[in-house]
Length: 337
Ligand code: SF4
Image 1 (cartoon, rainbow, N blue to C red):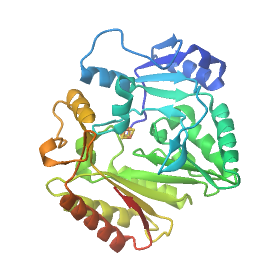
Image 2 (image 1 turned 90 degrees about the horizontal axis):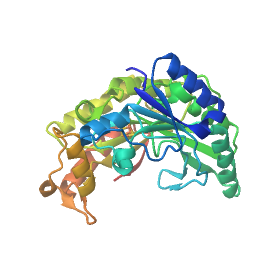
Image 3 (image 1 turned 120 degrees about the vertical axis):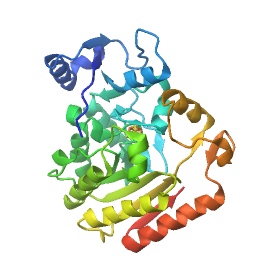
C-alpha cells in the first residue's frame, strides 16, 4: 500500500518555529503540493460548499501541521492511563470509524510538531504515578503508523519510553509501515496491537488501510523485533459467512506468526455497534454503505446506542473465544465487549 501524500497542506504560523514544520514546508513545496499558512489548526473548512461525501473526502486529503497546545492529557480507560496525542485523524476511510464520527467536519489530518514539549509533558504525567507504571495510548485519536513517514514521532516516542522506567507506550494500527521501527532499542516498553478483521470486513468497510495479509506480515515483524504484541478484532460483525471469515483470519494469523505460542500475545474483542448519530453520519458520507445499521435488527441499549441482540452477541463471543483458545492457548483474551 502507498504512503499517504496530502493534496493540500495548511501550516499553522506558530508551528514554523519548529524544525519539523520547516522540513515539511520545504518537502511539500518541492513536491508541488499547495501549502497555505493559517492561524489555528482548529477550524478549517473548504472555501466552497460541499456534499457530506465530498467534504469527508476533502478532509481525508488535507494535512494540517500544527502545535499541540493542550499538554494536560485526558484519561484513556480502559486502554491506558492517558491519551498521548501527537496527531489527529488518519488518511483512511473506515466507514464505521468512531473518530470520524466524533471529529465531524474536523476529520482532516493534523500532525503536531512540538513533540519534545509533548514528551516533556509525558514525563510530568509519569511523575504523577508516584512510582507506579503509567501507560499512554498513542492511537486514541489517530493511527500513528499512517503518518510516521512524515513526522518520525512514533520512533521518537519509542526511543523516549525505552528509557522511562515507569512509562509504557501502547500503539494500535491498521497500517503496516513498521520497517523503520524494527531496529529500535524499545526495551519492551512499547506494546503494538494490530487492529484486524475478516477479509470481508476489511475489503467492504476499511478503505485505504493495509490488507489483512499486510497487517499480519507487519505484526510478525514487530513480534520478531521483540515488541510485546496484541490484536484488536474490531468491529466484530455478523454477516453471511462470518464464522468462516473469522476462522480464516485466525488460521492465517496462526500460520504467519513465527511465535503464535508467545505468552505476551493478547486479544481484545469489540462488537459492531452504532448510535443514531453515527448512523446518520455514515449514511450521509457513504450512501451505498453495506453496513447493517437497521435499528430493528439490533438491541437498543439506551442513549441512542444499538448493539447485537444478547443471543447473537453470546454466539459471537463463544465462537471467537473458543477459536482463539484453540489456536493461541497461551494468549490472553483481555475483554469482549
Ligand atoms: Fe478510523 Fe482507524 Fe480507520 Fe483511521 S484506520 S479511519 S482512525 S478506524
